Length: 121
Image (cartoon, rainbow, N blue to C red):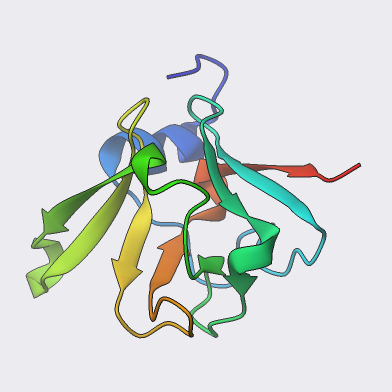
């Protein structure tokens, strides 16, 4: 995990925190490009799979490579959810739900503070 992360970024990536809904700087990003893990620069999502889920967090229907993430059952907050973790640095990214659009039916609900974005040239 990078050493130059802010307190908020570390809280999310290391302590499984969540940013406030509708507060993330990447929520409304419509530029074409790639989203990377802020903790280690692992390539995670393409702007091609990003959509507005109305949830308050950046949402994607699929990762660039399913092998770049790991899934873990999360029973915190009295619910059963599936946590999405960066395979390279074990950073908490968000959660995935089964209420997304076609073609996958998945909604990867990801914290902006756990992501970096690089715009396509």
